[in-house]
Amino acid sequence: MTFTIIFLSAFFLSFGIRYWLAQRQIRYVAQHRDVIPAEFATRISLVEHQKAADYTIAKLRLGTIENILSAIVLISFTLLGGLEYLNQQLTQWLGNGISQQIALLCSIFIITGVLDLPFSWYKQFKLEEAFGFNRMTLKLFCLDLLKGVVLGAALGLPLLWVILSLMAEAGPLWWLWTWFVWTAFNGLLLWLFPTFIAPLFNKFKALEDGPLKIQIEQLLKRCDFASQGLFVMDGSTRSAHGNAYFTGIGKAKRIVFFDTLIEKLNPGEVEAVLAHELGHFKRKHIRKRLLVSFALSLVVLALLGWLSGQPWFYFDLGVTPSLSGYNGGLALALFMLVSPVFGFFLTPLNSLASRKHEYEADNFAAEKSSASDLISALVKLYQDNASTLTPDPLYTAFYSSHPPAPLRIANLKQSR
Ligand SMILES: [Zn+2]
Image 1 (cartoon, protein in one colour):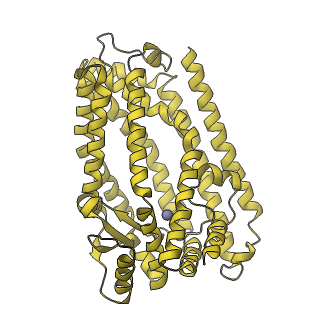
Image 2 (cartoon, helix red, strand yellow; image 1 turned 120 degrees about the horizontal axis):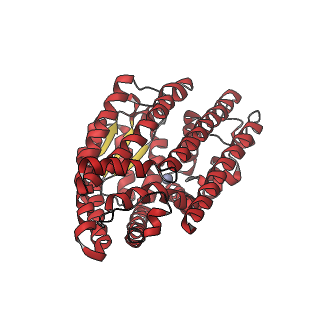
Image 3 (cartoon, protein in one colour; image 1 turned 180 degrees about the vertical axis):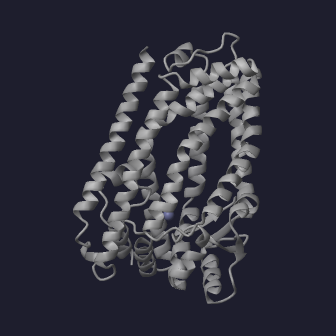
């Protein structure tokens, strides 16, 4: 009973904070809809500013509905007995063993995936479409979905089988062995992603010879960075939003530009954006994030190792563990459903660290490339992505991985 109360308190508190912050952000953006912040007045038109406000608000409204639905789903699975029902039905059908536990986890993935589908569809073909960002066809949407499911099954099912076997056979330290497997699996994914996974969804071609390539190669030399090539990705087949990213580890590192980014920015601005990304690498942000995530997964698995042996963990969340003692999949399912409720409270810490890294990467770009090019690139990206220039300070503090545009630009102006 105690854990039911703790869970419900965390559930209502996190739901309440989420809702309250979203409403604050909607109100704040709406209040500032008609006045462009002074420092952007010469670069952004009122129409663009208002489009950003409307886009931000539309996304938040949709997010609120999604939150309500996922809260209902969570309570239905746990305290209202959905998981218990599924578990019993599958036990009758498949008996008590790993295949039953895999079936249980798969049914949860399928149910939540199906419930999420209308939202993804609406987001792409109604919301993004209405603001002129959608470039995706329904055919591509379905194809992506199909590929995602096949890929998820090909990678996820063997992993799940290994983890459930460890839970069943490896003794009290199963969580430690699972952590080694999990870490190795993630390392493998990082290595496979650029060469095998990303090309399933997008076309990559080498950046063409020309002034941009020369400029970028000079930047890489200046920053002492070796990469396995510069690529342009056909991001325009899905969305008008532009971006650039790094991918891969060790010698397999690649730099990828969305074609939409190269279309919109001049070579100096592309260089500045890349210098920012290089800053994340050179200031060891990527390495730190990776280490933090490995350490965190060890803590999480140790916690799961302990919880999975506590009867109250099951009973207080509305399920009855099997008497034969094998409940690996059930514990995993409960943990996956319930842990985000508690993890939510760590969001501001994560956002704070991320914003600090963004400033450091901006400063790196100002030093190795050009602060004024980065400023003009940022303004263009904010304009093109219809990102709001006037976010609610509290909403930003809680969620934002990037500092608000006015603060980033003020910081860059200082370093110029
Ligand atoms: Zn960044």
